[in-house]
Image (cartoon, rainbow, N blue to C red; front, top):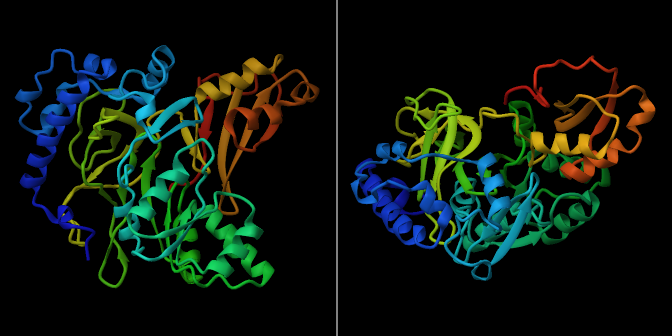
Length: 412
């Protein structure tokens, strides 16, 4: 069963509709968005007759957007309406600013929830953060667009959440897979019944096969989606035949997804790993060929789930050193900020690992003595909004290779 008829359109019909909407949105928005106008300089939108021809337009990389937003606040000249016209305004780590526009399911989450088995009338406990970053409101608005009731739980305070689950009996969970395991373990420890949870849509952290299998054995089959704070849900897992998970992730409707060679704007052949580039056709905040910094690949062939859009392999790593820890992006610029705030430190390397099915980060810091590291752990948490340990390294011990973030987590 599909969410709507858009999901089963043939390729030509979908491409014609996307091109029509692309020209309409970009023609209207570029008159009001100077950043978009600059990106489209010299481009005749009416002459673009296929999605492949978008390759002639320069990509907008996340790192560039940070700089442009600093130069032309709040959105770098890419919003086509004033701030007062948006519904909500957010800030994500790394000082990236995102709006939420008006309208039903602005982030495109409802399809992913539906594919995960969530249905109208379900109660959903939403454990994504509602604080400053858009994750919580993203899932909240999608669930309510689907006709669900939402418990706005956010992350943390597991004991209170277990009590809420036992009392309200939600059927679905939204949040990181790590925190779902924490809730299940806490419920077992407290001897509380949270068996009402039967479905889950997870994102923001790795979902290794071992954790997925453990959750399934504990009565909670989950599906994951690939989403970003800038774009909403880009792709999501689907099922076919007795709940079998289909390989890869289905690209969301009303998005144009390309895979380009990292560091370029050139699309790669289907099946080749490259950087995910997305065009989002929102009239108030359209993003044109936005390079996410994430790696993936287009999967060949039709999906056995019955949907006809393209599939990507899912998240295959980062095209740059920026990484995601417990659902939050951590940028090299943040590591540099720690060094600026803490005099006496030499080279820094933030190492991200996986321990006990959870993301763990450790800052390796060169310093003449361990005493110099006093207070660095608090600065690390203040800058990244995440907790991590700090380990002393003697001066000259860290490699001189330019790497400041090392993601040592096993591939999912």
